[in-house]
Length: 318
Image 1 (cartoon, rainbow, N blue to C red):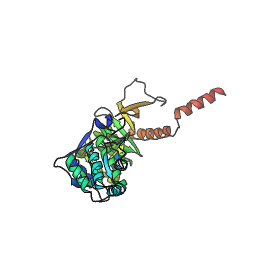
Image 2: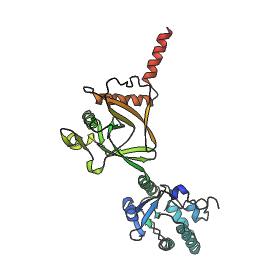
Image 3: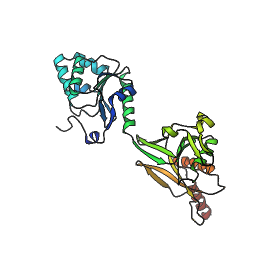
Image 4: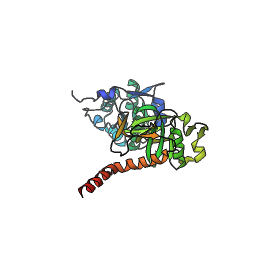
């Protein structure tokens, strides 16, 4: 029947696996039924409240979701005839759900334990209220399913905007980042930036091994947090723009008005991009601060090139 037991293709493909014990530890769950070395396979971060299923309405049941029983579902389950409850719980656990969680430390009924053991479905309890544990499970699985890539560059929080500095090795990305930190901005990652896509937003961070570290040629490795304090670093930051540092070439024409808009796509997300020529004596950190401010103004609907064009038009019309 169409819609019955909705195990949609996108929810069964590209599933991510995690150790069930790790899942329980991360969310503070107590295992009631759990086989040794059991794995959980997730393909969607949504959770399912099975009230309608317990009532006998089985249409559109999303069997690929974690099933969360709250006080309402458990109260209804307790009101059912023992034989009917066993039949419906057995049917529920037979559908291949990843696992089941009972909120508020409610003691699982024997029918739950029997079905979980029969179909080898992990069964947990949680001390949290239903809404809280449901949200926590969703956040956990979102992190697990998020797309991730590692890019060469430096990520800096410039006045609240996550700027990914890119460019060939030796162009001066780390030195620019150091000056930005000295001016009150915050370092997120140097040299290697791990970028994860979560809910359509790119979040960047440093590998644990080099977190808060910055490599400056001629000086060596410095710990930015130790030198400038915890206010000078961030563990992660959204990636909002890409600034590529390029070597200055005499005779090459560079963007001078700012009417052209470049973009760079990362994990399917399009980001505004600027190419900033590097030349001796040029204060790049000031240029970057101005560029960030300009991007913000564009987001608010203001465009300096458009204003200049309007002024020229008015002058010509006089």
